[in-house]
Image 1 (cartoon, rainbow, N blue to C red):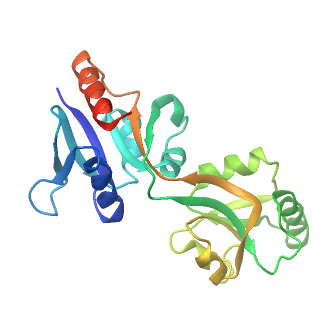
Image 2: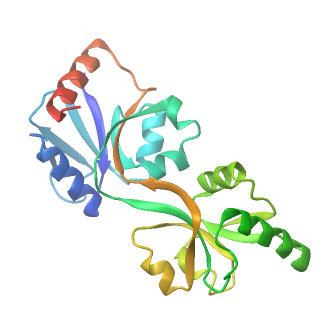
Length: 230
């Protein structure tokens, strides 16, 4: 019986994941051509490689169809309700870093904190008759964060494209989005609230708590963790 390990199927996340395992004595590679979404793990027995999009991996882990998976910690928290009951972090991998933040127009000179945003949102609803719009792809994380910090009188609107451009296009008043350096936000006339950090994300190796873990699976996991130095 084999452990199924899911890793991102393309791009820098896949390359960095392969490098991370390679530095620990395990070779991960695709099987066959680039269109085939299966792979091989060399350096240990009993581990099967599945190549999936980073967004699919959290759901497959939560459903127990993957035993282990590499994906962004932001994606796990966004896509899996009660994620910490269904998954466990085995290792933060040190790449794929990005911050999920709340950003507002630079022209809002008196808005620097979440309390300021709450006050602006209340005034906006009073003046305009509808709630201030915050565009995001991260509805769960943003809603939980704003609730925790007492921000009300807003509505989340779904962002399908480049979230940084929605304020300039007047389809939202503020955003919640991923940023690495903040340069794209600044280029689009936005600033991050001083206390607007929702989550600092990076590529993380997760273990599914809902997958089948037989004695054979556990023995393989022990050998893998030993190999990875976990």
